Structures are given as structure tokens and as C-alpha cells.
Amino acid sequence: AGSDSELGSSLDWTRLRDIAEAMVDEASRPPATEAASERRSPFRILVVMHPAETAELDGLLHECGAEVFAASTCMEASRALNLGVSIRAIFSQRWLPDGGFQDLVRMGRRCAEPTPLILVLPQIDGGWIDLLEAGALDLVVEPYRRERIQRVIAELALYARVPSVAVP
Image (tube, rainbow, N blue to C red; front, top):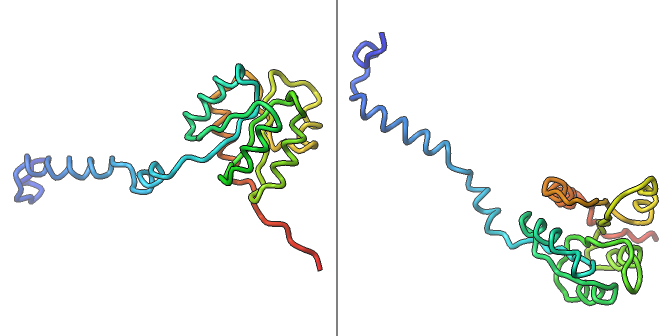
């Protein structure tokens, strides 16, 4: 058993091999939807931190497909948020020279599309729940890891951008 003649095939074994290889090649190609997603423009993230501390985070955000806008103060962040481009999220330190992350939370809420804030911390202690209650959507703690940044970005897609409903 096993020969083409015993199985009733009239095709030469090399022709059968060619057909099988074509089928495997077709099955191995990425779906067309992946190619379409690669053509989309990158999403925009505003990083509000001291410039000397942004390189690692900026690099990871770029690797994850983000276009990064940088600011180092609340004033600069306000200007960036008012440029008329859609910002998906704000990554910020807790304290800035002219304010803090809560100022940025308020700015993000006033945007045409409410923009969540991800708080970036050098370390974390037991007070992290207070930071979330104060308006941070999530926390990222050093050392930054690509997997963590990817997970936070994936969660941003779930962030509800529902306009507020006026109560009569």
C-alpha cells in the first residue's frame, strides 16, 4: 500500500508534491486582514515626562506601533492636546514642574475624545489604589517591559469613549 497506482491516482508523484507545496504555501500566508492592519496609521500617545527620562518608554511605545508626542510640563501637554490630532492616551509621571498627573487627567477628560492617563512610576507602594481613584486608568512601573506596554495599549482599545448623555 502507499503507491499512487494502488490508491488510484493517475498523477505523477512530483505533480502531487507540487500541488501539496502550493497548498502549504497558501495556508502559511498571513491573512489579508493582517496586511490591512499594517497599513493603518499609527495611534498617537502623549508622553509627559522629563526629556532625560523618556528614551526607554518612547522606544517601547514606537515598537508597539505608537506615534509619540513629547511634553515635559502640563503647559506643553495642554498645547499638544489642543493640536487637533487624536491622542489615544497620555503617559505621565506623577509630578511635573507645573502640576501633576491629576491636572493631565482633567485635560484628558476635556478633550473631544476623552483621553485616559497612564501613570508612569519608578516604583510602587501600597498607595497605588489612591492613584487609580484619582483618575489614572492604569500604572506602568519601571523597569518597563514590552509585554506590559503592549497589554496597556491593548486595554486602551477597550476604553469607552462614549459621549456623556445629557439628562433632561
